[in-house]
Image: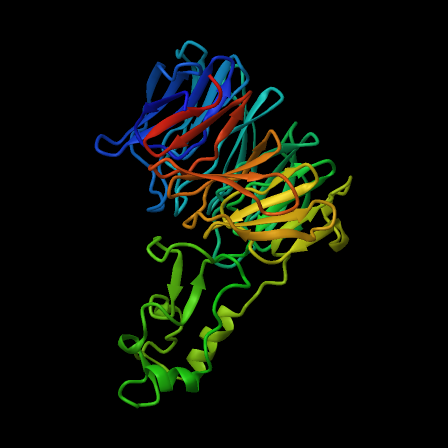
Length: 446
């Protein structure tokens, strides 16, 4: 460890440029959002400024209002907040311009970060009723263009949380039901491809192929436990023998409608049972489930959408409009993470799912090179990163795992920082910068 600086809580990743590291932070007691600049060599705070949000957006219990990662061109620093909008800072911390907006109304919080595309700062507000893609001019923060995005095509998912990807002079968005691309110049649509995810994971790329995690709404479509037939459910849970299921007779941890693979049982919203989703299946509202209503529950739980699901590889080529099915190069249907971004590195694609399960796939074919546990269970919201021939993973429990970059699972180290980690580590030079919930850390050679 080179240094550690205690900070207010934050889930965004560190942004590293020149002699600075930039992060966002939120103090719950005072409801204060901040942008903080630290010295890259010492960890000393160079400047910090409050983001003047009139009120704080609603976020998921596992998330934070400070979940966005800053972006910089080395001259100015651009920070987005779902509670405020966008702010541009000069290198010395003075405010260059602001773009205030109404508080975001995404049901689980924004979860997105701004990116730079030429002379524009690009960001999304991708939720009902008018999901939109924005481009502001870097010079003065004026609106260059705004594109209203197509409504979600995926039942149950009406808001996206991923960050735009700038690739081949295009803006690529992972959205509920689609992966789509837009022109940087004016935001007009280029192409789109149907996919099963809710739009949480950000796409990544290698050569002429895009990779992204599309586990389907509710998590990995292939690991949800299948409910038993109605007769078996009656035999197990119909306590009074009336041939129907009352809500009070149903278990709290069985008969799952949604069960995200590897996610801790105490994670809010991670698992949905028939008991908690009762209102959707008790059609006649008589407070009982009969055989027909229970059948509706079984069909809903087994309803795998026709769109592509899993870890996906797409070659858009020069296509426009709806891409043909053969644009999908490959798909690996199992163990696709819901939140973290896939990593393409040295001809391999890595993805880490909750429970500490790493999948290493051949980037050209999608063939599983290896899959296994990294000896650090728990939730994983941060994305894998790579450098120096090694792969780095960070769990929400605060364990940073180092893997060898070969074609077999090799756990080199499990380093417990003792503080939860939500943001993805940043590698710069020979230093690893890690934003844990309550600190910023730097590791490397002195």
